[in-house]
Amino acid sequence: MSETVYLNGEFMPLDQARVPVLDRGFIFGDGVYEVIPVYSRRPFRLPQHLQRLARSLEAIRLAKPLADGERTRLIGDIIARYAGEDQSVYLQVTRGVAKRDHAFPKDAKPTVFVMSGPLVTPARELVESGVPCITGTDYRWLKCDVKSVSLLGNCLLRQSAADAGAAEIVLFRNGHLTEASASNVFVIRNGTLLSPPKTHLILPGITYDVVLELAAATGIPIELRAVPEAEVRSADELWLTSSTREVQAIASLDGKPVGTGKPGPVFRKLYQAFQDFKRKVMRQAA
Ligand code: PDD
Image (cartoon, rainbow, N blue to C red; front, side):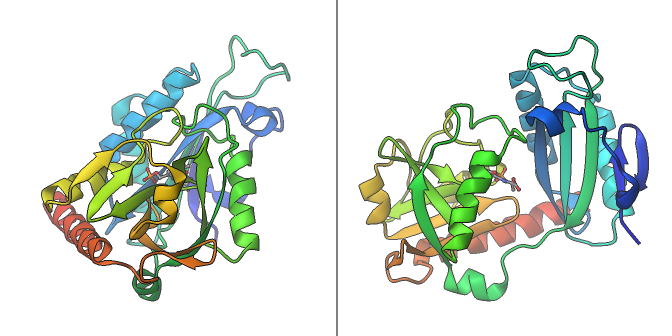
């Protein structure tokens, strides 16, 4: 049986959900999305995800298709209709169906789609071993702060990681770290946590914020600044963060071990803080 999804005001089985071929999401990649992790049936950092969605919608000049309360209720409904305890809710809004023309249609109705799936966080072995990554040139557009469904650049980059047997590709633009194809990147040097600040060159990750909050709370010094490629290549530790990866250590970069080649002490501290924080937040929500 296929799971229940939401499309334009109706709940229906996934295998019956259909979008017309002239939807601008299909034709132009003209839309935005969110991925919201759900632990024990409770969405994690939902207000922050909805705020980022609102910013993405504003950036592409699309009016909010649903009021805040409606969106929260809808996400609650999708979570309730899905079987798993830990889920990953996917929400997408496109500019809707219109005759093909690059300029915006006057009266198209946005397409709103929501589904849930299993939240597959890294297995214990991968938390303990870390993952191999490669590096590449960040050739994406200059609005990486918009969570757009136009992900061709990200898909091409991720595929080159997959071809190399790597988990992710760490990206550099003009000699500086940006992020990875679907995650933010943190660098540890001499005990200090470094990461690029939130600009148009990276997605403002919700997990990025959680990691910074936890680092501050556990006394890890933080520097948000441009990080030159050489500092990444000679880092003591490198981490990836995202809603589905949580915090994950990079074991090797382009085949060379990062630090000792094993997740380092700062990672272990932050990973534990992240797990404790998750449990605390979920208990409070119960
Ligand atoms: N990706 N940078 C990029 C390019 C991303 O696509 C993502 C998330 C992140 C991390 O953001 P957050 O911590 O809010 O998940 C950074 C999601 C998970 C995806 O596209 O599946």
